[in-house]
Structures are given as C-alpha cells and as structure tokens.
Length: 137
Image (cartoon, rainbow, N blue to C red):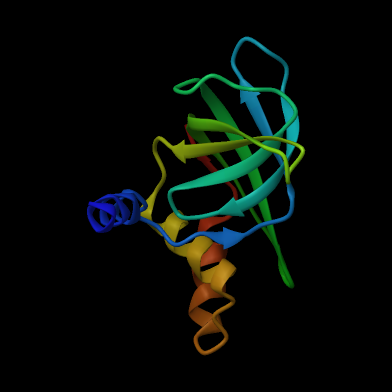
C-alpha cells in the first residue's frame, strides 16, 4: 500500500522544481500586492514562504523576475494557491501556487534558465529575447 501512495504522490508533480531564493510579488485581488520570499519555482508554479495562512484555491497575480547575467526575465501570471502548510523549519507557511495560464515558450525559458544550460546558451538567450516581459493573465 505504501508503494501505491508513493507512486500517486510522485505523479502529482508534472514539472521539475528548482530552488529559487528571490522576492516574488503576489497580488490577491482584494488586497494590496505583497512581497513573499520564494522557495522554489517550476514551469507550472512557484513555492513561497508566508507569515499568514492563505486559503487554498485563492487566486492572485504572481510577479516574478529571474535574474540572469544579461538582464532578467520578468513575467506576471495568474496563479492559484494549491496548498498552505505550516512549516516550523521555515518559520511560517509554505504556499504552493500553480500558474493558471502560462505560455509554453515561457515555461521553456523558466526551465532553461533554472537549469543553467550552458551547452546551448545561445538558443536560451534567443528565447528570452523573444519573450521580453510577459503578461500571462
């Protein structure tokens, strides 16, 4: 039985997660935008640390900036809180957010940047140059 539950939990994630230690702005529609320290990022969402417990399914706009040597990739995406779990090691809540709509080219750029692909960096920079600033609301 434990093998089945492990397999089901492993299949729940569709995208590779990468450590990401930057500030991210979340704008929950009825409130003013608030900055949260990010924990990790993927092509499908982002994890942040919060001092408040945010309800699951709550919608927001996530403003993210990934800094690279030649500038940065900034984007805004509609996101939904999937979980909010208290973590004593993080001294607060861990919010897991999924992007609601995000362009496949932006997902590719996120993964390429976070993996730090050096073997084909020219094509990575070309993708980023075409993307510029994204608004995926």
